[in-house]
Image 1 (cartoon, rainbow over the protein chains, first blue to last red):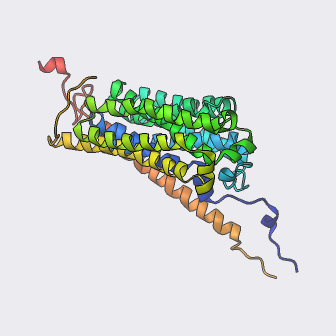
Image 2: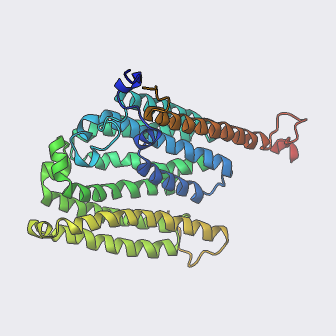
Length: 317
Length: 60
């Protein structure tokens, strides 16, 4: 007698981990961290339960936009080496499922944040999801080589979301943090794009190195690094910063600038010789750079809470 | 040949169901905790409530 197993003919049925992967847990981690910092450094204390619930909503909102991004980009994801293993191109999750999960979780996260925190935080979360999915993924990404400059804004909003959860309003400090991530994104991604150029070219995504060439990209990386420096130092002179933050930020910026300069003067023969070693190191350092900036804001906030702030700086903003 | 009730597909489905069950359970707990926090905040509407606090202008 033949083995009766009617389900054998069905397509692969997703595991729970496949759905988790659809929510881009790596991006979620960064979102949770920056949103948490935004919330902790805000001048209004938040009840820990409300804080946890709100952070969860922000993380789910970020995950939902990740799922919608994967749903929209499934054609190019299947072409690029870096993204071929994602749940949709690898056939583990059906596109329709990703769309349903993305839309469902987007709605749920926004509505719950309105209940848990406040309407303004919910409105900003909705705007962030809209910005990432519609403006970046569906619009700019395939249209302009400046895609990530504007698209970076979506990744820049979480600290502002955290701040708005706590205070219910916006002030200069969270806007500076948004600007910090916004200006950090181009050098970070263009460094990656330099050695992933072939991937983007194959997928037809107009990344800067694809369209304008490597030399121009290196110039842009250096230019954006110069713009980033004053923005990264500015929080030192607001109520969220301090001299410790300033000292660390100065050091990080010096290393970043040196790295950007090294990329600027490198020739094609150099990067062929060491297989983009400097570009990869620069890319890695940018992650550490951003993490440490936010970590230092946490340190400053903790010191202030215990009245242990060292070397007070004038408040310029 | 026997019908195998524990096909690999069933294990996968079971894992998914358990995970969704746990998430729903945590969600219920979260809503409960948030409700407790929100309801225990001082309020100035119900004079008989244990968390009643007179409005600011009335205390001055």
